[in-house]
Image (cartoon, rainbow, N blue to C red; front, side, top):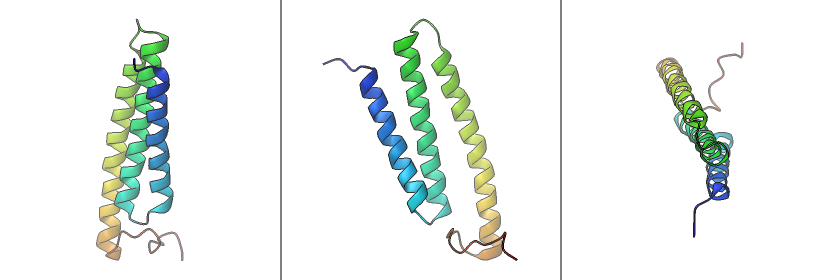
Length: 103
């Protein structure tokens, strides 16, 4: 049995679904951040799979995947800085108890 485009896209969809479910259902900001990273990795898998099977001679999917990884690293850095700042001021990272925008 040969692994085809359908297998990679199913894997990508399952990972994206797990990440989406986790981001919408969990309360911890760190877990939500990890789930968003999982969704970005699922998008990178889909990009590389499309690149390999649709245009095998070009490396456009790999370039997009590197771009996604760079954006994910920057997003994680900023998000962790925000989470640490909120934890220092509120002593919690539970998203239901963070109400910084309320007066």
